[in-house]
Image 1 (cartoon, rainbow, N blue to C red):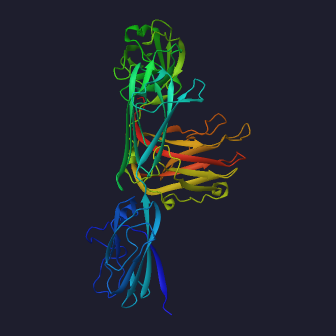
Image 2 (spheres, helix red, strand yellow):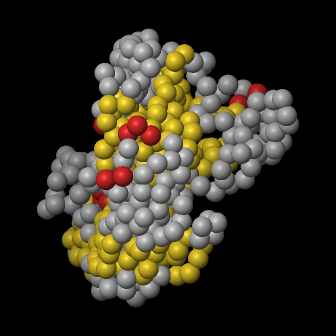
Image 3 (cartoon, rainbow, N blue to C red):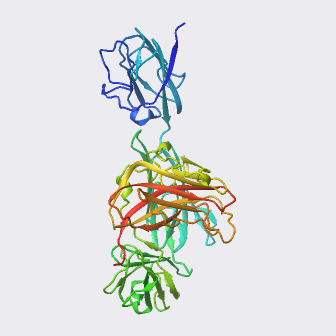
Amino acid sequence: MKKLFKYIVTPILVFSTIISCQDDDVDISVPSQRVIFTSEQDQANQIRLNTDLTFGDVSTGVVSRRWTFPEGVANVTESTSDIVKAVFTKVGRHNVVLNQVFEEEAFVGGEKRSRELDTTIAVTVLEPVAIDLKANYINPDGTLGAALNIASNAQNVILAGRSIRYTLETAGEPQDIDWTLEGGDPETEENVNEVDITYKRLGVYGLNLKAANGRPFGEAIANIPNLIRVIPSTDPVTLDEIRGKKDGTLELNFSRELNEDTIEPDNFSISIENGGMPITPAPVIESITLDPAKQNVLVIKIADDQVYIDDTVKVSYTAGTLTTTDAVQADSFTDITMDAFEQGENLLEKTPIAYSFEKNTDLAQWPNQNWGGKWELFDFSINFGRGRTGTNSGVLDMEANGGAVIAHILGTVDVKAGQTYEIGAWTYIESQVNTPAGVNFPDFRIYLRPNPNFATGPNPAYTSAFPTNQWVYSSILVTPNETEGKQLLIRGDNEFNDMPLKIFIDDIFMSEVDLRP
């Protein structure tokens, strides 16, 4: 009896007339050799509903062939042709089987196999890209409120300084999602399915949303003019954030649009410490201006100095004339600390490093470092449904009283000796930890190897107050002593927590920063 060999093809190249082959280039000196193509091999044979996929068999020494398609999924059921163009009319994953009989035992990838081969080609047919947008008011206590009317010219009314949660459901697996939220803070977002937007400026604003894929191509667009009408509020005006800027200025982000004529610089004061010591001479405010593009933001410029990322900056205000455009005066505040700093370019974006877990999901690129003991009590995986941006995230799943050490071996990032870098990541935990008093909290750390600095602290530590069920960014400053290419080394420590801890990781970040001289 003849031996029948079966294969499942993982396509890797594009069919264009004939440019290459699945397992080997065609070698006419080999009498019998399997060589198969599809037109979407570099896209893992993903196509859209009611579009076509071309299959090609340019094997040598073929006596007979038969392509078999599942019943009811394409306009072809069987064919004996060397080239077959099939239109797929059913969503799902479908197996197309090619049966070949050769003159003699055929070579596959340089290995001699049987005279008769069955090859299965998996085809994924995606539905058209579609979007379903919903929105709800966020109540002052943080709970979700009433639904909005998602329609052009709906002019859903919201008080200035209040927020709306937009939730997007998609079909057809779009890879790129772009939000433009007129009048909102933030005004743009990318590759997220849920956004909380605060409306700080009076007026009427629309929303533009696009979900798309380059290949297989598909897109859905929603342009909704006059969706939101922001009206005056009597709510107290709050200072939501103090952010340092790379140009050395400070941004004070208030909850509402401010009246420029009511700014009084003399009512503000600022203090700066670095390394636990006050800087001298003491900082003097040179000017305070309203950001013309974001009129809820005050910009503070310091005379003959600037703020740096490693500074501890505190701002105070004595209530005076500062008033919102809806006539609410700002209250006094004391020693509010700078809690963010403008980020530079993410150096990892120009490397093969899978900083966002989207383009490379091969777990072999994140090997266990085999430290032994508690450091072996973990599992690492890729989650394909919970990404901060995109759809994917890394998951470090540590057992109770366990730990984890993994490295990323796909590519390096170049660093310079003596240059300081911000290294951070967004992490997400589902439940609070259970750690006894007086011991170390569980933590997450990112090192650079070779020559990692293990004195680098938690980034972050998962204290009992750490937020759950939301993405949180944490970063540290690292100054390498070497000029060389570095890989990422990730360590999780759950030694004193008697419960398992699952850490979702996304959007690892690394950028050059300047420290105070």
